[in-house]
Image (cartoon, rainbow, N blue to C red; front, side, top):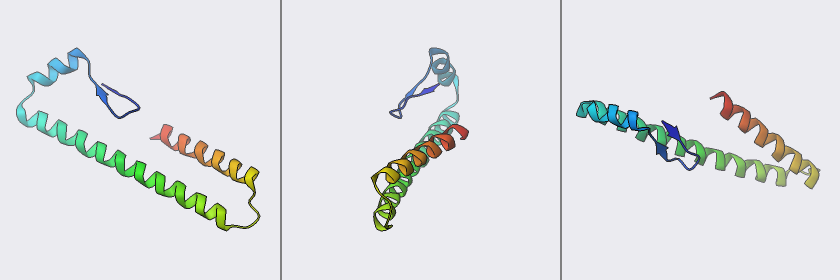
Length: 88
């Protein structure tokens, strides 16, 4: 199974055939797991957006942080997010 960056899922023919052979209850369980995983992902994305907005507001409120330092902070923030995504 492949999950694309846009959130869509692509399954192979073998996976499709395997799913077709499953019982109705097993397929319902699988679909519920996908649903909750997607809901978690959407919640994480929303939380990240709020976190980014809070960071931007905090940088605006603190005196002495110029455009160069703000760019450096944004870069480090992005790097840390990427590191945490790779470890998940």
